[in-house]
Image (tube, rainbow, N blue to C red):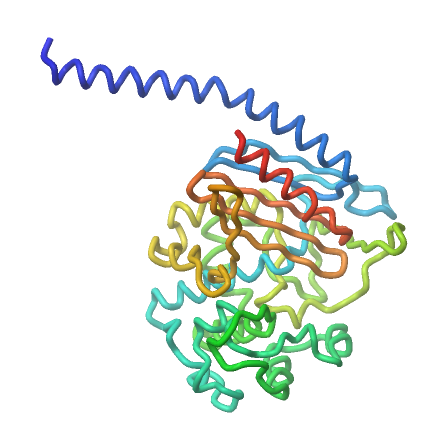
Amino acid sequence: MTAEYIKILYVLIMYLLITNYASAQLPERKDHLRDSIHTIATEHNFNGAILISEGDSILFEGAYGKSSFELDTPITLESVFNIASLTKHFTGAAILLLQERRLLSIKDNLNKYIPDFPNAEKISIHHLLTHTSGIKNYNSFPNYWEFAVKQTTIKELIDLIKTYPPESEPGQKFSYSNSNYAILAFIIEMVSGLSYDKFLKQNFFIPLEMKNTGNFTKSEIVKNRVCNYDTLNNTLINARYYDLSFKLGSGSLYSTVKDLHKWYVGLIKYKIISKQSVDMMFSRYENGYGYGLGRGRNLLHVYYEHQGISPGVETYIAYFLSDGYFLVILSNVSDGKVMKIKDKIIKLILNL
């Protein structure tokens, strides 16, 4: 038996041992996650759905609480939630896909698309993606709730944003602003010739079979859509009404935990955008923000994350690319519990 043959045999045996060990450990890891997360969700009286995966393999999925407290219907893994600001990294991916098709460049300045916008000749698409444009966040407008309850076109919203002077020079500092992603949605529609909704459906949701994901409209009937709740003096109340039309590109999408896992797999397997675009999306730019995602850190582990908060909505997503894990938490109650439980769940994941 030659030395080369022995070496090959040794590698094969070690591979089989490691593979078998990992396979044997999987049920144990799943049981540990299930028991631990059930304890966390129960202790915090969490209302929503959670999914954790390692690549294609789902390690945990669970649903807790009520979809409708009035009708006493439970949350399920098919429950449809507004995902709030998790929408932003879909918008970022759409911009990168248009760049791949050479229909735009992230280096383009805004005057190419909206010539009369303040500072348009200095603001690039990159500035919009990374919240360094200096454009005022529409959430801080004094008349926010006047337009938030009305059906608003993206052009009407941009015309309103234009009326507020810049808060800083482009590229000068990071300042989180939903206005940036409203403008990006407008650019997507302008360049592609499709509505934001249709562009994402054709290029992302249909190819990935994300059948329960889309863009909310006022009139649309969405099967399994949850009701939304806030708390007042520790008492559950119906969430304040607002029209999601003005959140196009920044917080308008709905989805399920299962569909968001399909999205994750589509990204890491480069099914919808190229590796180069995925790398750009999951990068650390100003203040650790990428193209629709921020950067988190837990000891030696780096991951990309985003939270979403709106009346009656709390969401969180995290991509642990180097470790291979994915986490999504969706809730229809805005009570701060998503951000409380996500830290505990991250510790569980990284100790698997």
